[in-house]
Amino acid sequence: MSNRIVLISDDTDFFDFIKNKLELRRSDKLFTLSFEEVPENVDLLQTSVLIVNSEQSDQKTIDLLKIFNSCTPIIVTAYNDNDVFKKKCYRAGMFDFIPLLTPDAEFRARMLPALSMSSILTKNQQYRNILVKNKIIDKTNEIFTNYKNMLDNVLSDIKENKITAVFGIISPREKDKYLINPSVIETLLLNSIRKTDIVMKYTPNKYCTVWYNTDTVSAKKQWKKIAKNCKQNLYAGFVQIEGQTVQGLINDALSELSDSFDNKQTENASVKNKNINNSDSNFKMRRRTSERKFSIMVTPLFYRMQQKYLNRLSGVKLEQSCNNDSGLFSITGKHFNSSFKITNPGFSKINIVITLQKDSEEVDSKRFSFEPDEFDETLLEDLMEQFISEAKNYA
Image 1 (cartoon, rainbow, N blue to C red):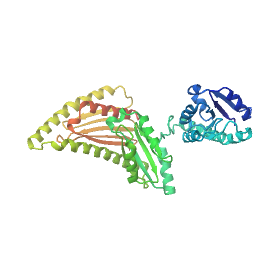
Image 2 (image 1 turned 120 degrees about the vertical axis):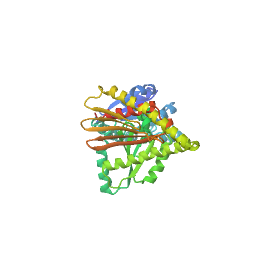
Image 3 (image 1 turned 180 degrees about the vertical axis):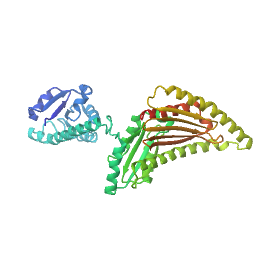
Image 4 (image 1 turned 135 degrees about the horizontal axis):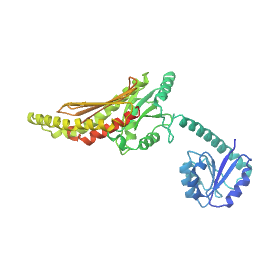
């Protein structure tokens, strides 16, 4: 197998000096770059062995190490063997430090581990490309895309090896779902969990996770710390893996996630309701006002959404019905059924239940409640747009 080596230096004399030390084979490939040329050659640097001349370029070397240390072995060279600088380089991810005046034979010998590592990284990249091509992991990160197949294998392994593990589903609230860039959530999760834990895509901006060697109490404590690092509100539902089926596990976690939404809403509602007058007259007035608002808002919006998507979604049936205190909007396809149900008791919260069934199995179920004074047509329309957008994936 051929080796690929990249020399990086702002001193062109360095290139000839190192070439004489390496004794390259015909199949080996050698490239030379200045520090300024690095940004234009990022693809070349990945999985190559980098030999960097740090003479008069200490900070440039440190910056380079911080960017590329995870994707390629980097050897730093210099005439001066400065211990302080070496420590900084090792902290930034340097593979090895070899003084320029090291004898040629020793220099080549110390290159071997880096070349071996480069070969392993190249093979890993090839395997990764296969996984991406087969849509097993995401192209841009280590998120698994097929949660069902992944969970089947994970649960079998957990059962066979009697491993303690927790399954979780993580998501923003439905009305905020498309206001958060998926990369924000994915980066947060991948940077916060352990290497042995797993993250899988479930539905848009909703993720499944498996955390090994822990319990739900510890997982919830850890999640509180993780969630603080995100500016947007994220919620999680965790359940202990105890022999459930994949669908049973998902249903349990979705129920916990829904409780997490409700708990937050209850906290907010308790603050708002401290000064509410509960007299009979106010109660009746609130009920009539709520019923009138509900009827004026829901019925025409359901009709508009049905007309809007009537000819945009092929192979599905759109149905809607409303009365004074409830409404139902459903999308039915050959292999799935999705429903958006809203109810208004008239004196408390407005409740929404969204369900998705595929081949008679419940894939997703969401419940949330809103105070009448915080619920408006814009919020309802946003939720319906999200509901229809998710249903499109199964149409």
